[in-house]
Amino acid sequence: MEKKQTIGELIKQEVYKQMSITQFADAICCQRNNVYNIFNRSKIDTILLKRISEVLNHNFFQDLANDLSLIDEEGEMARDKAIAQFYKVVPTILREMGKDDTIISGSLPDEPDCPVPDFLLPDYIISFTIGDTFKERFGENPLLPVRNMKNEDGIEIELLTNLVHRNRSLNIKLDYKTEEEWRGTLAFAFELYEEYSISGVWKQRG
Image (tube, rainbow, N blue to C red; front, side, top):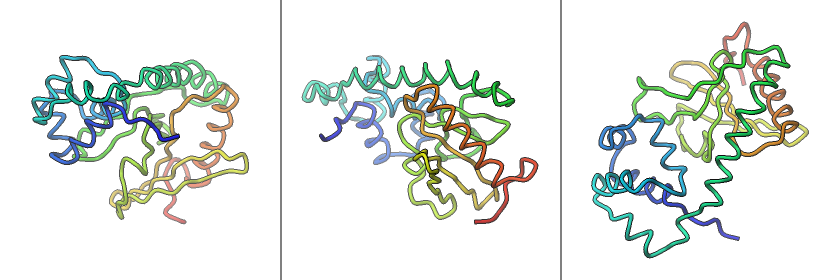
């Protein structure tokens, strides 16, 4: 069955046609990482939608009126459920593993036009994205190649190499996972972290 388009995806398409993420964030007076949150929404505050419509000179209210399927409340609830589960179980699992359980919102203010993750484990350069993967956010960028690493249990984690700064990071797609699924995902993430790093500095191999 074909996936229904959401209002956030429609806004994303229009932004990419007209301006950079930085320009759009400045125009609607919000931080860059909040722009990606807007792109992942299936419902949106009317005042914010009015501002976005004015900035992009596009009547999104008319789009909603013409296609009510753009409003996907079930999808929004699924996203909220995934984030709630993430915050409920991940810090506990990290502590069980003897790891720092600090989780922060992703932000790269000094990197213009660079997609950012939604959440980070700052001590381990491990990030989490809601909706789009790093591959989908960065596209085919020769300076930021992304590889999907997969283990025998079918768990997939992205390995991003930044050829400009000569470092690497891991990214996990934040969707709903049971506690055991999160435990397996995080275990695999730290296996990769140890494999590709020495004393926290990423190897430049592979």
